[in-house]
Length: 197
Length: 197
DNA sequence: ATTTTGTTAGACAAAAATGTTAATAAAAAT
DNA sequence: ATTTTTATTAACATTTTTGTCTAACAAAAT
Image (cartoon, rainbow over all chains, first blue to last red; front, side, top):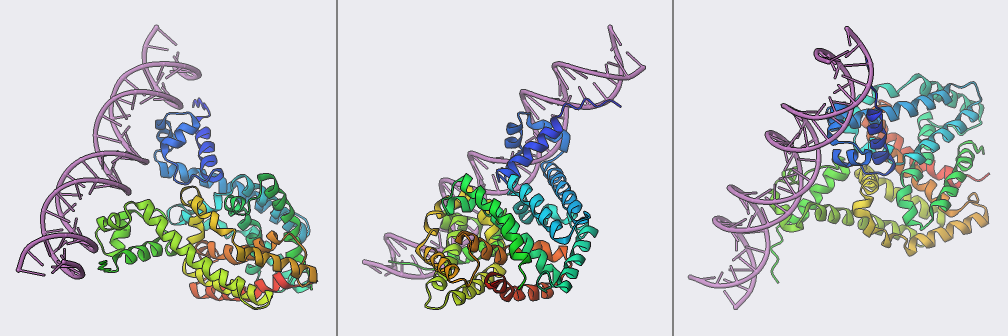
């Protein structure tokens, strides 16, 4: 079974990911993707048959990678607080590289998201939520529906990065300055979540 | 100055707003919008010339309405804490009706957003931020860059609603149950922001 | 060497979406 | 009342985007 593997398939996926999730060109046409990758548009059909299937492949890859890294955090043998800190670090890093990834998920949930719904209510998340509840009992974090805790965590992490393209222009802060603000958030979020009264 | 004003123009805008920002059909074609409004597709060109201009009009209307209501909150003669509570109430209500509005702003920032950037760094926001700084001096809220305070506020409000379409499916919560969670957040967010240690 | 398999490219076809023009109907103005 | 303006529609044209088909090419296998 020969496989020449010229790397074109992966190149196309990487380029699409860059265009869609990093640069936010969510309506990128097959032509634009092909051009950016420096390949003929037909190659794209050869490997993925259709635009939709290419996009689906790109998205699936991205999600799988991220959720795997997050699962690792959640299952690691550390304290709840450390786990949370790790989750924040992993997630922020990913979001900084691909700020439009989540936005894409939301806008395309009707087209692509449906298939992805199954594999997200996973064991690691459940176990992490369980631990959160335990911590609430112990009093190290405020008592609330653990779903709120998760929502708060993801809100504080995601939203500023989702809005990054906008905020940079809005607040007239430079790329560097914005970077500094985001870096501060890692500590700030921990403070907000674990601040006990 | 004649103006028959059959209400068609407004009908088209309202319908487009519903489709785009409430139902999340961000790629709605002119045909789909026309059908949903029950008018001929040409009417849409008659009133707005092009699809882009229709969308721009819809978006501008929506943003202007919301930012006006928020400005009122920020300039009202009440305590900082009350102001914040009002902002949350106004914003949550709007977001619940049109959860895809912000998502649209982000994805289309390159196409439409550029014009809107000017009028957002407004006086009311500056004055609100100033008050936040004062509160930090007084010690009623934690000390931080006031931009962080604003980011936290909007994160905790927006994100769960942006993600609502996804979360409902993800956590397998009913519409009603999700509604309850969101209603709880109004109080919860205030607690997080104004919790002093 | 030639057959086979995998890969790339060009030309063409089809579909989907937008935009234009001209004709018709309805209302307001004179 | 008839003329003019505004609103709406139907038919047509254009553009954009996707998808297919076939041929050319390269590398490995026989």
